Image (cartoon, rainbow, N blue to C red; front, side):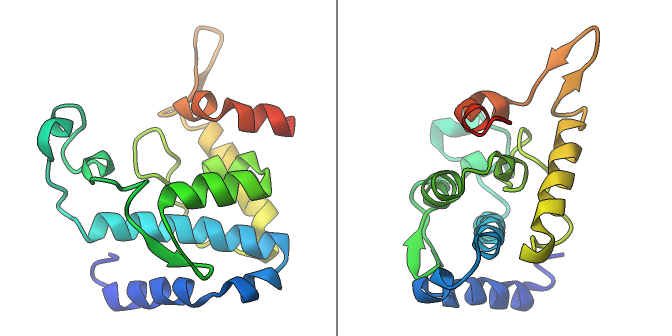
Length: 174
């Protein structure tokens, strides 16, 4: 669907890049948080569609499935995207902005890294005026997703997200 509407998608990507640091400085916390979540998700999609179909690369292809985002060389630490007046990697947006500046563990249920352990992409953009509702809903949906988490009398199996980012959940009291 995004490929069919690529002009609209790239106008959106351009609009993300047009937001300056000065503009961001005037926004509320929720406006900034929604912006950075949406930017991360849009840039992840951009990385995929610009390389689709994703080709296996060298030995990495032996460890990850075909068309996996993990087949894209440097997807989190070398590919750069323009947002907030900066040229940033997905890793920088996630770790240096979203995790470091917002202290909001629910971002892990909102940002989509396009792998099986990550949450599903929300059907709508995150909006500052309903962000609390959206983050709560996304968290409940992720935790109750039996593909990612199982909580029963017989079994407890949690997404790797809880292991990878356990400090984020402990620090916030979540």
